Amino acid sequence: MTSDSQVPIPRISALISDVDGTLVTEDKVLTDRTKAAVKALDAAGIAFAITSGRPPRGMAMLIEPLGLRTPVAGFNGGTFVKPDMTILEEHVLAADVARRAVELILRHGLDVWVYSGEDWLIRDKAAPHVAREQGTVKFPPIVVGDFGPALDRAVKIVGIGDDLERMARCEKEAQGALGARASATCSQPYYLDVTHPDANKGTVVTTLSKLLSIPCAEIATIGDMPNDVLMFRNSGLSIAMGNAAPDVRAKAQFVTASNRDEGFAEAVERYLLKAGRGMPAGSAARTSAP
Image (cartoon, rainbow, N blue to C red; front, side, top):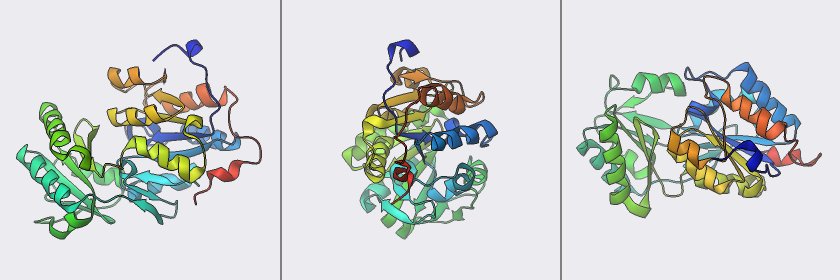
């Protein structure tokens, strides 16, 4: 990260935002200032899109308040859907990779969830973070004794645990064991997301660039977690939240306030709207989903 005066702000035609820790508050709320900032982007001709480790269904409640017309990238790019939830692209884990990931996570003493199709499968409804996740995504999990056939079409497997050292060890081992056949990164300190190798935040940028017909160099990205650094690398302008870890902030061109202090809205106002950038008048059709 460098000071504002040292980084020229390029022409920006789209902003891609992470959701949890970035777009919403710690209580998963969209503030009025955030909604106003997204509306101002639209008025300025700047497309706005969201991406998250959440399933697409878990972001449906954001579509109407934000007036989204762009594709939504769920599962960190594992599934791209239109705002009406019609699937545009889906990247499913190979069945043997999915099974190996589950075995590895359980061997580390962590809990595990599987997302397959529209279903969220768990082993124990009383396990850590299940109630919190249900409150976030607004739909219930299905409790199963065995993941069975769901692993043949798993879009995302999640390892869950509050022992952060154990989580870090599991992440490192998963990356080594699964190699290029999967993306294994922590979307939160207590969540290890295992997805198809093409399902990562960096690919979100290149895929939305294609779907929106906007060059990556004209896309801005904003996020707070290590997996958001992949977005930063592929975009023309990168912004880290103030609540991000120091190593994440160091990888972004700019740092805004935290999600407790309207950091998302501040970033839009300071780096996108004040800069007077955006698409030429009449080109707003690029914000519509295919």
